[in-house]
Image (cartoon, rainbow over all chains, first blue to last red; front, side):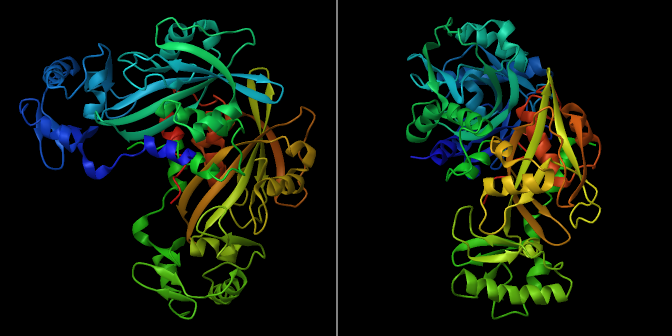
Length: 283
Length: 283
């Protein structure tokens, strides 16, 4: 087992299996060919060609969202898309651009639209040793049930900012007072592109570090995490290498933490693979 | 002017202008086509084809090095390679693999063999503000004269380790006692591939951070740096964005520092471009 395995499983995307989803002159998604074919029966909304799928629905974001929602309803009925999450993500050609439409979170991988999340490394320093707070995901989570997770993590929903999402998730997931979360340091972003049973995950995770007070004990409030444990960062890193105990993308966030804090060191045989494997260029 | 410009100028490599340099089954370099053509008159050492150049010289690393050295002498005489630097770099298919041969540093871009360096961000914290020690390169440096630089930076020569190079360069370039440099934290690596007048720079820079004591003042000993200045990290970042005052690759190291320490923040319009632009995947 190796760090490389963790990086590869988040980057198993094969361009040959995918066609772009186009709106105007912009690519806004990546449709696996089987998913593209399933859109042929909605010719009012999508034009499916061999080498691309074009969004035909016109109008403002609300109008396009409504048209796509009708398609999503049908895809859910066919079991091609899991049931609605009742949380929408913005679909845009790039971060910060006005949304072309809004899409139920459950349908995001089907269309391969880029999704943004925020992950928080909650750490403690005791002498020279670093510790990480690790959560365990609830058994009823749809994605990665029972897997280990960062102290706080969440998707950035329609209309919400990065820091706003971090503050909200910090309260809900780990009962961190927002006054404390506000001192978290933004430390970059991790990116990957992954082929899943549902479609393509084209994800960008904004990463924050937060040094936790010695007397702080996280408490989950929303039922998404069943418990927390404070583990030596070196032991967490060993577990990332040796097991698949952590959620797929959390492995990458932990590798990034380990690199930035010198827990992973240049004499490790995989150092450069990790240093160059966590930041898939955006296109 | 933008961070993007700095990233792009280190990544202006065009695969169409280059052929691989092959040894056995491994790629060990990247020859621009004009440089590949210049090797045709050394048929005992290199076989030049349309789509690749193969290393023919056989034997152990010493024997191959000697054969290539003869070629380098001729290339220097023709002004295709600058005069010898009298420092050799190892040429290998990947970091940590046994070297196929050793190559004078001045000839490295001609052959496009991967080069490794180490850069040290020397910083100070005053309250909430971060400061960076910045050096100015001597006017007689062959590469990037007069440009601004990190506190310490150097290439990793044949037979030397990453930390060993850092300790040595720290003493020579900035008079940092090795006892202090030893506490530097390895924080990852920056990578880029750049087309230059001499050929391809396929570079990996190991990056370290070192918090400098308040009473420490760097002093150059080897004549490579003419002076040092302690600047607010935010001002350094503005200067990276607005000017070309820093050496090309130092811009990337500073952007990486700014990201990791929250000097560059997610509300910056170029945040994700920076976060995903500093770590060209190795191939």
